[in-house]
Image 1 (cartoon, one colour):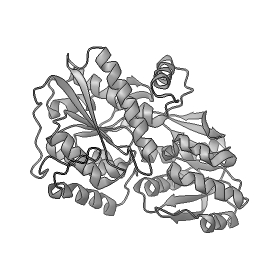
Image 2 (cartoon, helix red, strand yellow):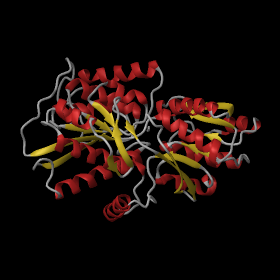
Image 3 (cartoon, rainbow, N blue to C red):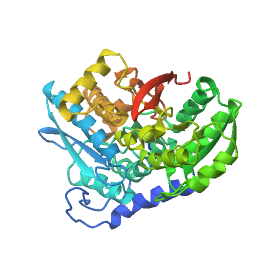
Image 4 (cartoon, rainbow, N blue to C red):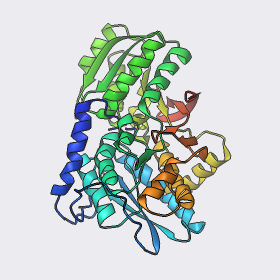
Length: 406
């Protein structure tokens, strides 16, 4: 995802590299939830030897505060549930799993700081994170350089795993997600003429916007207008008025839930009553704040809590009992990322970074909550996607779009 997912341009990729390079300049403050590093992260890449200890230490960095906090909190909850279950089953090779989570406040530089501390000070054997691709692109190079495997639960931009062989993910990627949205609009909604409204400053949004346009054109559709906004914008009336004037039958909005609520309300106020279509960045209980403005709108996602598979319903039941709410896609992906890590650790020749990463990357046909997962040669998850319809802020299953066959 969340993307904050997806960096499509070389400028953004370079920016992520520069952010990760700043780790050598970060001091050693001790703010509890934003984790300062324990030392210099520079130097050549080397496989980190597994430290001796009584526990199997796992690190997680996430946006527990900030504008996308629901992403990080849900993911952390899913991971906590997986850890609890793993420890009840005997841990990893006889060792109790110890989870250490740091809040990056939704900031790339804080992600560098958190990952550095997790590896150099806390001595974790593996890292889980991040939801947002821009933050995974900040933390991932630290893991690659220091030889510690990282699994992103939900960063959907292709560049995330291109960082190196220590980085993998359990979610689909944006070229497929863009296709999912386009296919659903063209074949299920029978729409041929639409517009897009995306965040030009957000890697996830701009990348997914491009993916959707390309896929929709191949399916015979036409994008009659393309509008953009920037971080912090609250007034979308000018963009929406321009889209309305072009006669669009739908609007593709590949942003985050924080923006979609305002966009939906303002569209309806302008009499623009066409469906809004989005990606997994919409996934948040905060969509209820749109009231009925998002009724009849859809977004692509990684799973549906209505999936009748026994393992899904058991997960939903356990999560509700522990956290008092229905798990969203972020929670399910956090749970899956942790479970795949534990499964790989049980198969790994040793707990060294190299051997653990190799076992993760060899994952095949793992029956996860978000579907059957195989990690491919690029360390991406091959899996299906679902499309959910919003009914008074509640996501309801609408369709499954299969992953393309290799």
